[in-house]
Image (cartoon, rainbow, N blue to C red; front, side, top):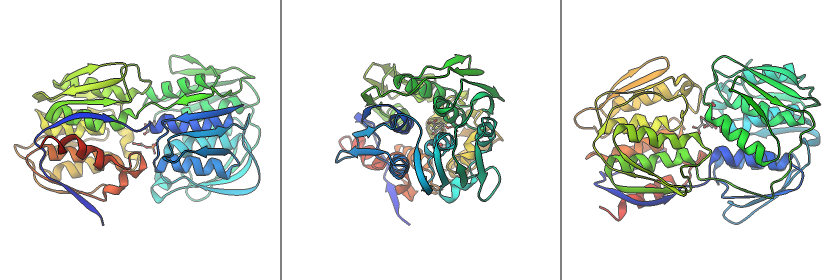
Length: 429
Ligand SMILES: O=C(O)C1=C[C@@H](OP(=O)(O)O)[C@@H](O)[C@H](O)C1
Ligand SMILES: C=C(OP(=O)(O)O)C(=O)O
């Protein structure tokens, strides 16, 4: 197994431009494919999750060209759903933003397809989405275990109407329904059951749909209405913002060992909820400058926080390792769905934080972290979870090295993370 050891880092400062947002890249590619007209997507993320979407679209008959560094993609829209004869099998790795939205769009298309993924994808729930699509008439069956991929889909015209969806496990189910709704035969009313999690991702969905010409009525995140007859139309050009979750590691580094770190590619008006990670750093005592073009963080004495972080589930993991540098006990609450992502993140984070010496309380839906007086040098297991690899790189901002097992797992969303992280301190140490 590959490993990387980061030696203690005395100081960080400088500017980092983060790669394109995973959430926006996969939404834009799918909607460009369903649109009338050609869309040029720029600042596209080049990572595993996006490659799975691109490969699936190609196999579904979508024509596109990619530039050399794969950050510009010109997509010829289909002006409606997918249509392909013969049975297809599409492998989607562990990309939730490909599996869930494609499931809905394909259920409403003229295709016969099996959706498969990595072993962990077969443990990630999808029942709430399948149940809601079945209300619209979808024909989807579970190939192995009930409620989980792989899925066999006999696509057909879905009727829309009133659909209930449980939003308490993943917002991606609602995102998938919303994006597919313009393919349905009728107007669609979506009613949310349970407490909708990760709400800001719905804002990303609605904003992207609006850029592709489809308007959704949002009744306080409890009910959504998509009127009949709306069709996706290419905006011509779609610029993907930098990834706000990827920004969190650099911003946290600035708060812990700045100097000042400026992250460009995302700014105060970003559509991504994860920019609110910087508000948590502010609460912990860091100085944050919010600009249209960048977010900048300077180091300070950090103190603990006790917060509901349901709105920033991905960036909240970065708070768990930032907590190692804060005075007092930090609690991250209302994060039950950490357990159904790339790994059981609640348990994995608790296990790895204990290895570096932290005192950790792992609750059903929360984690509390009390830092030790000095950190241990540990080998961090990453469970094929890119975010565990990235957030534990922050341990090197102490006076102890850190060894990260399988650092290549960052390829899911940030293939050259460790090179970019090193650039922040190689000029300063
Ligand atoms: O819609 C999206 O782009 C995402 C939604 C979130 O998932 P949940 O809604 O399952 O929390 C987030 O964790 C994931 O990385 C991306
Ligand atoms: C939860 C994540 O991914 P996915 O889009 O596969 O759900 C993530 O990137 O942290």
